[in-house]
Amino acid sequence: MDVNNAPTKGNLQQIQKTLRLSRNGYDLMDRKRLILMNEITSLIKEANKVQSDLDEAMKDAYAALQRASVDLGILDAYNAALDIEEDDDVTIQVRSIMGSEVPNIKHEAHSLKPAYAFSSTSANLDEARIAFEKVKELQIQLAQVENAAYRLANNIQKTQKRVNALQNITIPELEAVEKEINSALEEKEREEFIRLKVVKRILGNKVKAKAAEIQNELQANA
Image 1 (cartoon, rainbow, N blue to C red):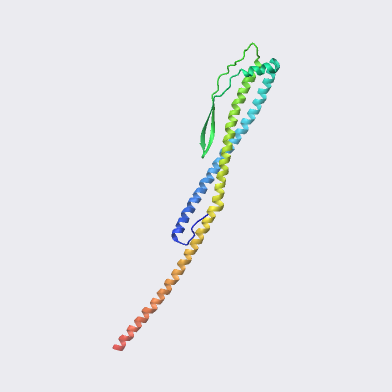
Image 2 (image 1 turned 90 degrees about the vertical axis):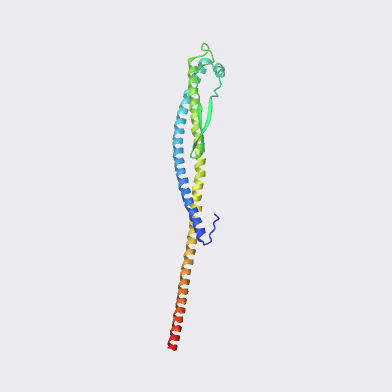
């Protein structure tokens, strides 16, 4: 860090001001890091729960699909799936958490309206479709939570670097320069004090000598 360490009171005041700002910045960054750590811990717990629910939903969905394939045959089940309309009602917005923009995914769920004929399909196909709708909703939730956790992790990493830089580099350097300038100024003050004492003693001696000279002259003229 480039600082002006010339031993002057102006530089000392500037360094003390910068040191106060650095310490305040460190406190703010450290609090931000702790808040982000709490947020990401909550997100990880939520992600684990959603992942567990998704695993169970996937098992149920594929089991229902397997039953439908047995009832209808793989080809008929595949053709029935092609008749289902593509769902694109997903809106992605962003929200800020301590300066990190995280996604806020909104999905508008619609009532199930099968496009395939009931006469040529079975109830197992309906169950499979309902099960995969649940899988889709859980996948959307998981994508939102995992993406938010990833972005917060990046922010935590950057914040930690700044905290480390302030704690281990900036603040110690400023403290060292402050101590150095204080020592130099104190030494100057001591030197100035001694110089003033010497000057005072010299002036005192001169005054005494002059007074003695005047007194001698007065006695000689008496």
